[in-house]
Length: 339
Ligand code: ACO
Image 1: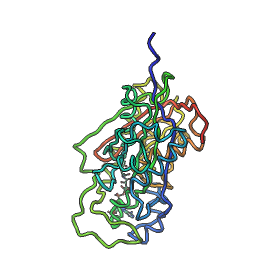
Image 2: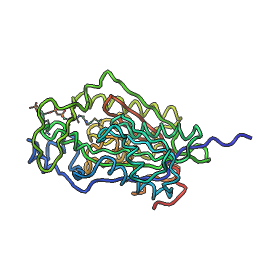
Image 3: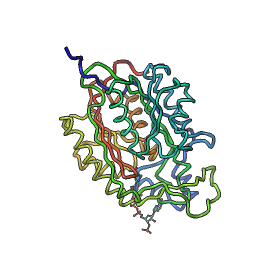
Image 4: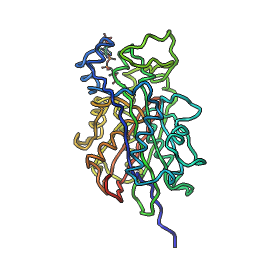
């Protein structure tokens, strides 16, 4: 007799938000902007900024520690570590290798980073899903970590008001229960639109730091209006595709967790899909856009708040630089109590 098709599911979640809060009022002392403009254009009220000594790997390690505890999985049981980030301090060694060392994970397990901007966490879920299903690994540590404050141009009011620092992590495991956990994914990219949202080298000499905010060698550049239009169209489409692929109707979905970029983008997607706001998780007012980390931070919060329950369909959807996009449908599986 054939063994049941194994499932791959999120076994534990963790998040880390740096302590320092940077409010819209604080920003209005740095660039010509106002709380009213930022709130009405984006929905963001404040964001977190990592301490100067905190690295992208440090933020990820904090989130990962919580996820490991939550999953009840020991470090020695992790046999794959993958990281999504657009703000790594180094490309080599990768943030995943730095995390492996920092957390004392087993030597010899594979560790690598991916670059898919704000879609990174969902890209990682798909990678873990396939690598675990293929049979070689049982538990993956999946981490999205961003210290965007080092690539934000704190002189550019059109971008600096939108982003924040943070990290989210998941322990992703295999189980023998059929048809639970990650039910389906769609991933996509359009490299022809790469220039509309990019991390580019600074052209002008770096300015003096203000308010203790870092000044990096690179800066985020963005055509806000084009990003906005594409994000709404592509995320709505990705939601429909993944639901069709899984044979699940939007009315069956208990919770939608969209990338937390802008409240107006989320509102437009919600209208497009015809769902009630009550079924959409939003926390961007407190953290801004934390790129790859935004979905796991919001998912972890929803999970701690008891908004996701055993058997619920949860729809995750992201869009980011590249352009990249992704949607993932989960059937929440929780063979444990929340720690
Ligand atoms: N404070 C005050 N005024 C500002 C600010 C600011 N922070 N930024 C821009 N303005 C001014 C502009 O200079 C412009 O002035 P002008 O009319 O005199 O030229 C005016 O406000 C309007 O600017 P717009 O760019 O037209 O503002 P818009 O309504 O398009 O909002 C925004 C800009 C918020 C960036 C919007 O386009 C947007 O949300 N785009 C999506 C981008 C996004 O979310 N990116 C995140 C990364 S991508 C991702 O994660 C999906």
